[in-house]
Length: 143
Image 1 (tube, rainbow, N blue to C red):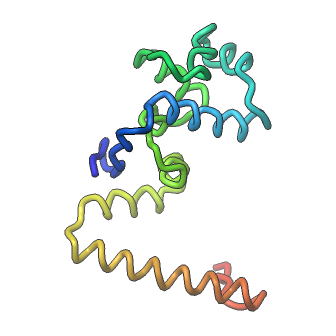
Image 2: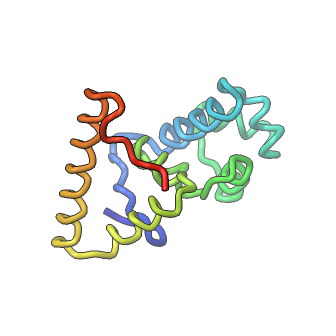
């Protein structure tokens, strides 16, 4: 694991090209915001012109300035566009302060702390499964 700031990021699979990961992340963001992959709109909103087509081609490199412009247009941190794991990308883009706090603590703690967190996750997953099986049960109460 390597990390930027407080957030752990798995090293990329050597066989997977960085361009593929970047395009996959940008495509997810376009689909979420535009409802579809739209290179023309990306080019216009990120102010990157024809470079948007280069991103889609996945075969050429792009500079850090382009990465920053694309990230800014979607209001995400640039490094999240380079994270290979889709679930981790979504987690890192979360605006939920508690999730970011948990990620920071997980990255900073020792193995014993991580094991405690993993146990808590297993318990929460089981509670979620139980709630799905018995609607109305296990839902958090509003305070």
